[in-house]
Image 1 (tube, each protein chain N blue to C red):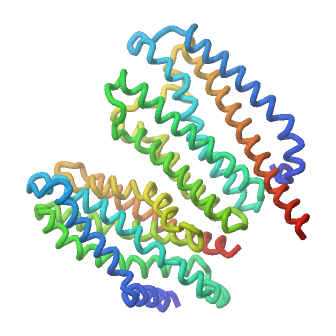
Image 2 (spheres, rainbow over the protein chains, first blue to last red):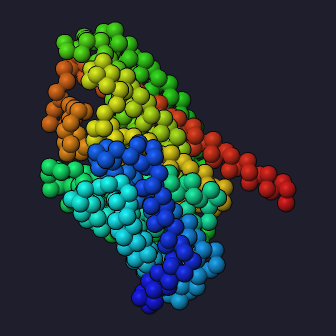
Length: 214
Length: 237
C-alpha cells in the first residue's frame, strides 16, 4: 500500500511537471547570480556554493503548495483515512515520493549550475555530497509545511515564513561543508539535522493532516 | 491545571490577579531599574554600558521563556484539547515576539560599544534571530488558521516543532563559543557580583510579572471577543 502511494506521488509530480519547476528555478538562480555579483571567477568560486545552497532552500519551497493541498481538497486524504490507513503512513509515503521527485533532479541540476558558477571540482563534490545529505531534510520540512498550511488562505507566504527559519541548520552545515580546511563535524551535523527532520516529518505532517480536518 | 481549563473559573481568578501582577511587576521593575541605573556600580571594564544588561537579560529570558510557555500551552491544547490553552499560546505570541525583538535590539546597542559591532554571526545571536522569525511564522499561521475557523491546532503543532530551537539557543554559547559570553548565572552559582546581581534579578522578575499580566489581559480580551461574537450570532439567529 505504501509502495503504491509512493509511486502515485512520484508519478503525479513528474506527470504534472511539478518536479521540473524547482529544478528550473534552481538553474535560473544559478544564471542570475553571476549577473548580480559579476562573473569574476575567483569571487564566484568562493560564494557560488553558498548561493546554490540558498537556491536549493528556496527551490524546496516551490513544491509545498502541491504536496498536500490537492489531495486534501479532492478528498483523497479522507478516502485513505476511511480505508484505515494512518495519516502518519500517508505522510511517510508522501515524504518518500516527494524526495524521489525533488532530491535526484536537484542533484543533477547542481552539475550545470556548478558549471555556470565556475565552481572548482572539489567544491562541486562537496556540494553534491551535502545536497545528498540535506535534500531529505529539505523534503521533510517541505512536507511538514505543506501539511500545516494546506487549505489556509495565503498559504504560500505563510509557508515561507514557517519553513525557512527551520531550514537554517541545513543551510549552515551544508554551506559549512563547502569550505576547505573545515573540520569533519559539518557533514555529521548536516546528516544529523536532516535525519531529525526526516524522523519528525511523518508525525508532524500526520498530526497536521488530522488537525486540518476541523 | 485542568480546573483552570474552564473559562469562567479562569476569569474568576485572572481578573483579580491581573492588577496585582501588573502593578507589582511595574513597581518591582521600577525599583530594580532605579537600583540598576543609579545605585549599582559601573563595570570596571565596560563602564556605564553594562547597565543595558538590566533590560537585555530579562527580555532575552522572556523571549525564550515565552516560546517555552507557548509550546507547553500548545501541548496541553493538543493533548487535552483545552481551548483555553490554545488561547494562552496565541496570547503569548505577540509579547514573546516583542521581547525577542527587544533583546536583539538591546543586544545590538550593547554590542556596538563593547564588541565593536552591531551584529555578528554568532550562534546565540543567530538562533535568537531565528526565534524572532519563528514567532512571526506562528503569528502568520495562527491568523490564517483563525480566518478559516475551528481550533488553532495547526498553530499548536508548529508551536511544538519550533521548540527545537530553544535548546539550540541555550547551548549555542557552549557549542560555538565565538562572541557571546557563556551563562554567568548557573545553578552552581553566580559569576556576577551581588551589587549587580540583585537589580538584575529584580528587573527579571519585574519584567516576568508584567509579561504575565499582559498575557492574562490578552487572554481576557480574546475570551471577550469570542463571547461577543457568540452573542452576535445568537442575536442574528
